[in-house]
Length: 144
Image (cartoon, rainbow, N blue to C red; front, side, top):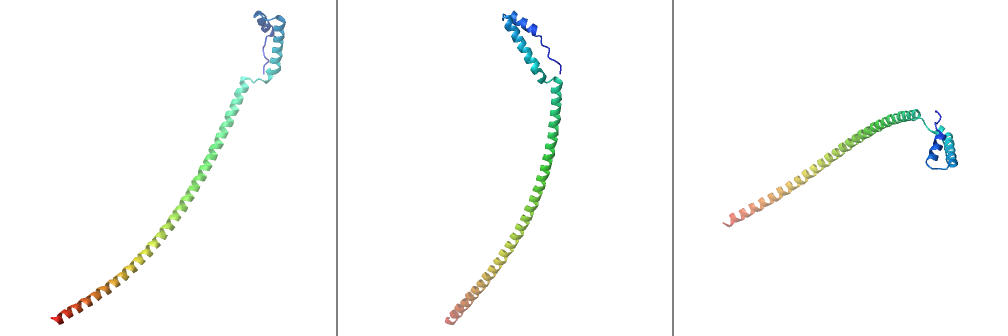
């Protein structure tokens, strides 16, 4: 880094021209010179700032690439998890469908049995009514 160009004599003369006491102007110029010389080496040059900026950009690009890779991996993991859950859901749905079919088949058999019992009852009742009707007709014929 190049040394700071500070003209303390010109600064002191400006202070004097502005109305400041000569001794005070010289002390202030001397103090400012010391501050500039003591702290000038800690200041960064434009080139150093540009280099830091480039380094930061490179680091940010690397971090962005890492984040993209990580996001891609997470996306792949999520897709796999979703596929597995989809397969599990399909299996569960198939099992539920099979259970429903079995339940429907059992209900169908129960309804058929109930219908057969009702049919038998109806036949018996109709037979009884026919016997009764024949008995009534026979009684009416004998009475006539």
